[in-house]
Image (cartoon, rainbow, N blue to C red; front, side, top):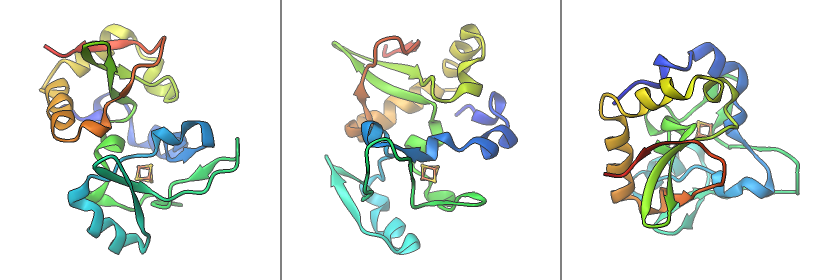
Length: 159
Ligand code: SF4
């Protein structure tokens, strides 16, 4: 799979962390913890996860527009290491449902990646099996497929 570090430096990512904070309106963006990792994540962080579809998410309390950070976030970034959720490992790319199709989009919330030329993003997503990996993971974990949001650039369409 293509490495995100090809288009997003570790430094830019570490300084920002916008993707690790959520407000009530975007709680649908909380990363899914796949069921096979549930126990390990609960044990590592000492938290209880709650079901979402067939998978799990962190149990976070929201208060309108107040930003609530992911319980796995520390001063030094994500503490989950190899247990980092797939959603986070491939963010700002997402698999979305658009009618009868599944598509891969890029979230404008990640300003660094979103500011790159669309051509470059398309090449990245469609090279080294990145799109295939996302679609294959979505086959195994359909809850990770979110509805398409108008205006999000479409970088790949399921073949
Ligand atoms: S699991 Fe890690 S990368 Fe994902 S939102 Fe939480 S802290 Fe950020």
